[in-house]
Length: 110
Image 1 (tube, rainbow, N blue to C red):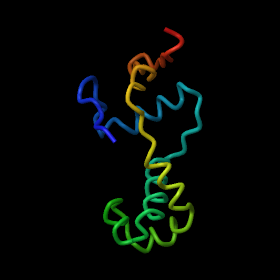
Image 2 (cartoon, helix red, strand yellow):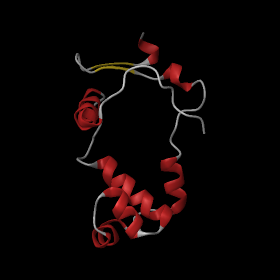
Image 3 (spheres, rainbow, N blue to C red):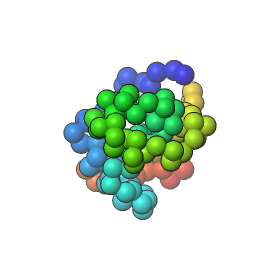
């Protein structure tokens, strides 16, 4: 795995939810509330198998992690989810997101 480029625009953490929600709407995608949080917790508990550790990482209680997220997915699926990263050279094919105009430009449409 190689580090992501440290150049270009960065979305501040505080704006991430708003930006991702707006992007999903622009792409006409269903985007349930807290979907990334729920996915992270579900896949993380499948991977590390420690409700205490995942609770600490997610800012939740071990009992909630155990009750709501345990055994929803497999370790193999967790490996796939956490492995979603662009390969070398794929950044050139990434879409462009103009957050102010709420416009998505796909690579083939330029």
